[in-house]
Length: 334
Image 1 (tube, rainbow, N blue to C red):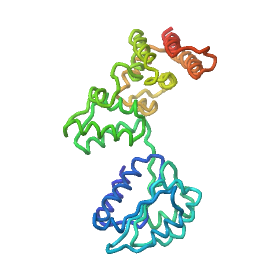
Image 2: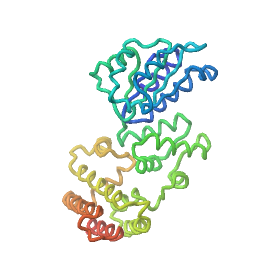
Image 3: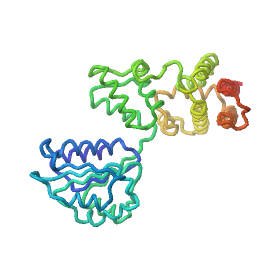
Image 4: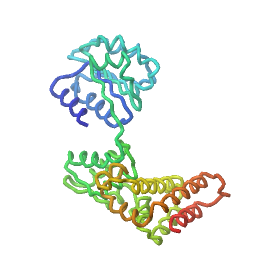
């Protein structure tokens, strides 16, 4: 994020480069930077003649270079944005000649999503020498919570730890998807609000009582009644709670417990980092550690592998989702 801020601040101060090559697995910041350049570099009056948006699937490298070499009309510079530039992966080396001698009156932006250029390649070195090469990396699970807090803080909102963890639990590391949900909440809630678990349940559609998040908690507590109640709800709503997803997440939970048992350094900070979990949940993991000795966790992991295979239709004799969930809980609790 610091690199993104530097690029934005450089543009604000007039230090505008002729090429911005935006690449990487995380599309969120690629879109943000591209949108910022598209919105801010030219005035509304200049955009009509001097701003061009191209799509990688529709153009060739030669088309891009030809467009980039045009002179601006009644403006200091033109902006050429190439979206989905990863579709040009096979011919991207043809950019070398332009990257070596870019037009000083053109700002060429290439959005190369989900992929990266080899930094040893000549084209990459030339792009970096005469422009900006930015790599947008995926965040790890344990980094997303801090990202959410930082984004909300910048917009004068805060969020409860449980609400934060719910977002990460259900939306994963997809920053664009998370940001969309946060923007929905910002429309509903006044500036200065603290986002709660209830806000997420009511406005994003997660049930606070029946979700994998609560099932995991019930398993850790060895709360059989609660676990079976949640499982019954899952069985009645198979489209919302696919068995493959449920078994996968439960399996992941017990793999984390296995790692926790094996840790020599059980300092909370180290545990959170190794398990890639929000520190807010460490109490749940501490309780689960006491309730499930290492030998039992190993047995459960083996049983869950079997359940996972059955959930995919192998050797299950057409078992229903309800039966599979009940078998899973039986193997865990007994």
